Amino acid sequence: MLRNNSPFSANTLCLPGSRRMNVPSSVIWAFLGLEVALLCLAGFAGVKYVLLVFLLSGVLAVCLAGGLPVIFALIVISPVVFLPGIPLSTIRAGKWIFVILVVLSWLMGKAFRGERIFIPETRINHFILFFVSWGFLISLHALNPVVSFAGLLRISSIFGLFYLFTDLIRSRRDIARTVAIWIAVGTLLSGYGIVQNALSIRLYGVGQRIWSTFENPNNLGIFLFLLIPLVLSLLLVRLRLRYRIALAAVLPLLLLCLLWTGSRASWVALYVSLLGFGIIARRKYIILGMVLAGAVLALILSFSLMRGEFVSLLRLERGLALRPILWSISWRILRDHTFWGVGIGCIPFIFQSYFPVSALTLNRLLLPAAGSPHSLFLQMGAEMGLFGILAIIFFFTTYFRELRITLKQTQDQFARALVMAFLATLPGLFVHSFFELSGIIGPGSYTVFFWLSAALVQATKRKVKPGFA
Image 1 (tube, helix red, strand yellow):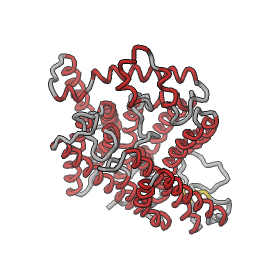
Image 2: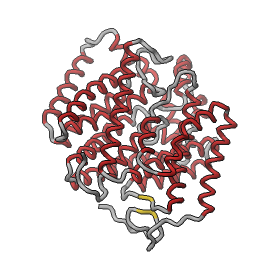
Image 3: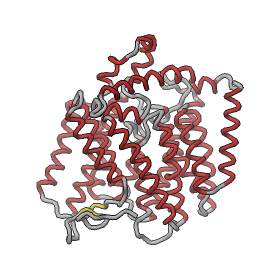
Image 4: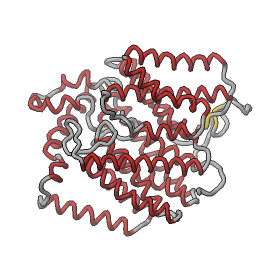
């Protein structure tokens, strides 16, 4: 068990001995000024940014009032990144401005009402504190401090969502409703993705892969990878028959959509997670099924029996050509900037100067990927130095141990299903981090759902009345 030896009262951020958080009016006006400043920045960027920000900011009034609708709005809005007629860069910028506004509005609403902020007792707090502090220091030494501080602001807003989620999910009924909304959104997105494949709708440069409403098929893959273990875990709980039938119908849809994303890293991560899930849940048939599936797949690959579209979906030639070059360049950047790194989001400013001569013929393929080494560990090393890699390793190791303890202490079957699903996800996410940006601090909207999962686990620890509906 973690101990809280801080001067703050347990699970809350308030003055010692007080029952409510008394915030000076100057702080409230500071929050309001920050929101106005963000809208002004959007105005300087262009009319489309302002329209998008105001379109998404309709939920801000709800944020000031608090409540579960804030989470529902984030779940519904976050995956919608690709919209016809609007540039991806515009939607990305507007979405992160929206997330920052939501977090600031939530804090301001808490201040107006004089309410306490729920701070969960978790090792995640240590990771977030170190990451933000170190990110501030390396931004001072970054190749482009403005870009680095902007990246730190984006990541800090993601961490803010974690505390927002844990504060607003206050009962087990809230947990059940949040999970239901998440699964419903995932089902709709998967259905739309399969329709894209059926109608042969292609995203530029992606070929046969599907992306649904995400900006990239890999991001859709991570989203589905986070959701599938949760659906499988809930299937093992003694829910009402109609719920189990619905989950059983949704699971094949999610798996099929994940297959057609062509996200190889997500495939491998899901395999590792399902194998781990079978071990954690002590379900021998799941372990046996995953072992047999792995053996059959290895046999097919060994004898090159795959032909046609499925072979092209694997994209082995391109993957083997690009990844080693990207990793080699990132490793050289890490070697030359071991302590401070180059700054958050600053890899594109230095990437091309590290091109090996043998890679000149691949410039057409490498330039679109210049901002990402396609590895979370190497990206953190290149951007934040050696301590960035150590912080990610610390997160995975300590939080996995914490979740194991939580699982042993959890008696309610529904809560155990949530903890078990997230616990099984971590090993897969660790493997995924070697080949892509994972859901911890990546730039994609899938990051919102990783921290939502973490918040749901923390919500199960609250002392509330038993029963989930």
